[in-house]
Image 1 (cartoon, rainbow, N blue to C red):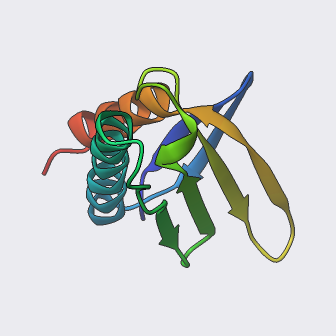
Image 2: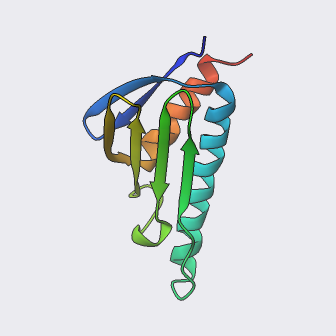
Length: 111
């Protein structure tokens, strides 16, 4: 059985089953978003592509971030959506806090 990952979205904390493999993918995508925000700030004339992470099973998880909206990675927020056949929850999360959540999960679930 997969362990739970805890995500902090605004003032809400959600726990959902999540695989270590998916957490590594999400970590990579969040770090890529941080780099794109830095690139967008360095060269405002060349917009950066948005970063989208998606997991489909066992629950749909989507994280979307637009690097062109934020002055720095530390001010950035991402849209997080969790949904199943029974429920859908969406909200903004601080990029750095979400990255911390993923890191904590990876450390706690090392093989």
